[in-house]
Length: 144
Image (cartoon, rainbow, N blue to C red):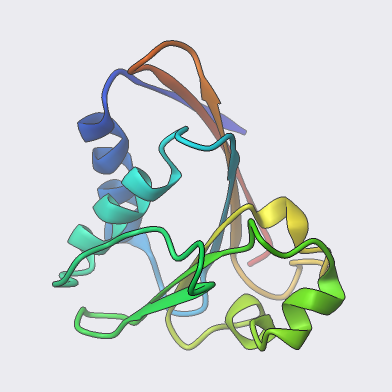
């Protein structure tokens, strides 16, 4: 497990950019943390590293935003409005969560109780608000 202290939204984006540079097809990155903790900021940096053009915003009401203009497709999911695995499957989101053809980033990943992640690369990151601008981001990789 690793811990990163971000002192600003720009530093959170920089961490996302670092992750985006090493990202590979099939990765799933799950994000946990309170509203406003910086999850979408991290996705903006990841998208920048993937050379994705266009606006990056949280897909709270759309559930998924697909970005296909970069070196790999980026699927940005938000499970905030879904409570159960059955609702996630019913919304058609399961293919994004199991071996995607690009990179999937999932806000509110704790709402997905799916198969274990032993057969694909999965990074789980938790955001904790320290102060108005500071965030503690802990993350761990699973699978291979």
